[in-house]
Amino acid sequence: MPPKRPIAALFYAVLIFAPVYWLVTASVKSNREIMSGFSLLPQNPDFTNLTTIITDPDWYWAISMH
Amino acid sequence: MTVVKFAPHGHSSNMNSRATSLAYAYLAPALLIMLACGVVPLLFILFYSVHDTFAGNDFVWVGLRWYQDVLTSREFHWALLRSLGFSALVLAIELPLGIYIATRMPKQGWLASLLIVIIAIPLLTPTLVVGYIWKVMVMPKAGLFYELLNAFGFTLNMNTPWHVWGALAVMDAWHWTSLVVLLCYAALQTVPEEHYRAAQIDGASRWAMFRYVQLPRLRMVLLIATLLRLIDSFILYTEAYAVTRGGPGVTTTFLSHELVQKALIEFDLGQGSAMAVIYFAIVSVICWAFYTRIIPKVPHAT
Image (cartoon, rainbow over all chains, first blue to last red; front, side, top):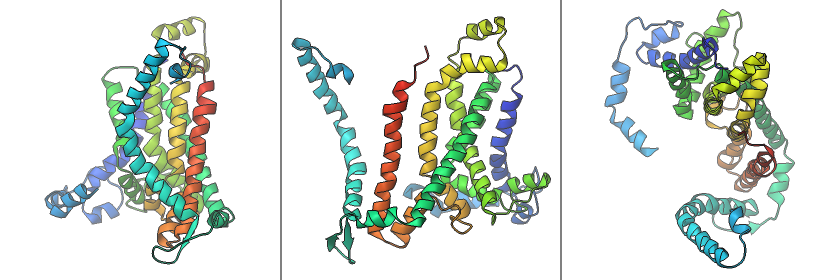
């Protein structure tokens, strides 16, 4: 019987999402912040890592090669 | 296919054989591609596995010597045992957990949709990215998994074999339990509301409800899930390699790693090919056993 309050499923979804959340937040953190322990929100969001990747022509070649 | 086999004689049999040849004509492109991508490389491997070569194109017939070498090598035995052990471990985690989560999902509504999207994320993640995520996850300070265990007073040490096995099992469970959840969830959608209500009126316990109302619907998808997870975990390479490189020592060197080590790093073509053929035979036997021995015996839920 499907439960009225899906607590277990919600808990599981949080666990599944945690590494993805960590990955996304780490992409806008500085290396120093990543290595200095876990913080839920990035202190100074910095999008240079992402712009580096998105504007790097090598990266597009890497996609097309695989 | 059985329809064609047991067709009566005469007119209809003619019709059937024509339909059969048409079916083969339609299948031909797919069969050709399978032949080029699957069978031809396999024939090369078979050829290498019974020949020795001295740098170049001189091949000398050696019979079953490479097979003998592989089958009597301790590295092969241990790598095979580790692979089977890892498969057993992840199946023991993923099947019960997947079934449990599927039964705890809401049947419909926005929350069900949201949960399905989140649960499907690991299935869409490239295997190398999963390996990379978990390599960082188990690092001190930076790693979420390490820090989470640390908060409970457990220090993860990636030089201790059973810690590494645990980390790999958690990684595989993160990646693939979702598959079991989604398959079971889809099967559970077919249980009519009346069955639950009837069971409730009969005063069925939660366990009885699961055992006699839900589980019969899950049989077929669980078989498929078991087969998929068994084969996939048995041929696991990328994620485990990204996290551990087979270490510490050789404690997480699975059969796939052993094969790559033998064939591409030591560049022992003969033994490597023989190992590949044996590996392939094991996987084929598992699939064959599933399709001919186990699946036909499972009664279909109505």
